[in-house]
Image 1 (cartoon, rainbow, N blue to C red):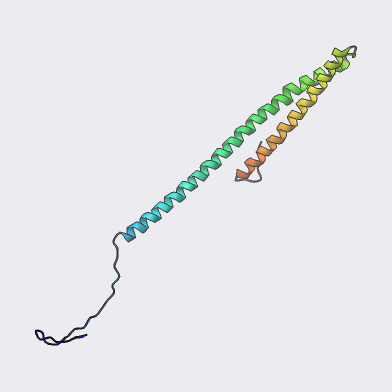
Image 2 (cartoon, rainbow, N blue to C red; image 1 turned 45 degrees about the vertical axis):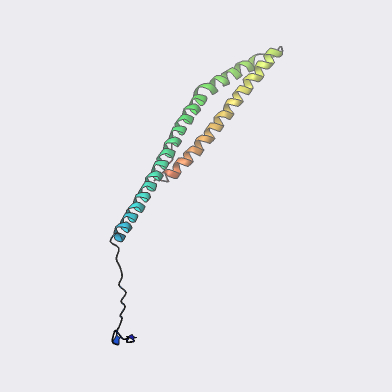
Length: 144
């Protein structure tokens, strides 16, 4: 670039050269490392959360299965035999009046209600067992 002369200054020339240099921010590598560490920690947290949810679900299903099994055992071993004996006893009594007919009906209904309740509990037990098998490592194992 040439500049014109003036009465006070003589004519002179000037050359400009421009160079673009990348500017490295010293905190940039540190921030990427911190971001990666944060992402790793979030992933580990999510993994741990998933594990705890699975453990909680398994424990809940196991406890429910135990409870159902106890109820089913009580019905099958104690209540059904008693209801069956009551039904047999009432069946041998000749229906003479409305009270004996009502006793006969109540005994028959109690026995069938208990059997229905046992079937419903068995059905729920099988559902819980199938849910537990979803979490089992050995898919061939049957929950007892």
